[in-house]
Image (cartoon, rainbow, N blue to C red):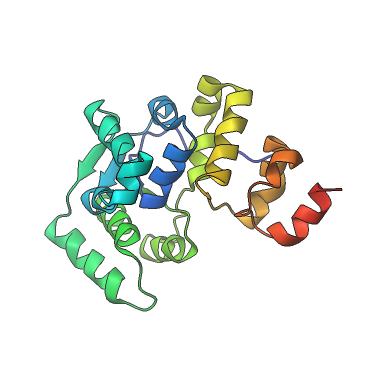
Length: 206
């Protein structure tokens, strides 16, 4: 079973949610991954603000984003009036989204860009607002052929493992078996965020 990145090479800019940045930091190859992608990378100011708290400063997530901005790998975007209006609807609607997801979706929707979001509610809302367009996953960044070509197969697998183990990256149920094949069952047992972990891990330990 194999899967590939859903991202295309049309260079449409990507708008990253907070959890995606956390995954990129956790995998330790985040800057190399973003550098290899043919897309521009946008981070909403609200998402950047979410990494201002003491925990993110202590574990390096805040510095990671700051370094990406300084290096010109990421653009921080403030919302227009129209984007803010959509953002306000998303954080107060039913179901409500958190600030990072809502700002990511608002900017991506209004500017016709692609949101990268792992959370189910946010992915569903992005599709509803954009003619059933499908948001990208953090995993799509790591599986992009340009990224895999840059990192090589061993480092690509390591980055995926660390994003799952340390970043608790979410993936789709249908991608789980492939991801386990990629990182190996011995390491999959460390990744409790994998879909169906409880029943799958019994088989991995045999």
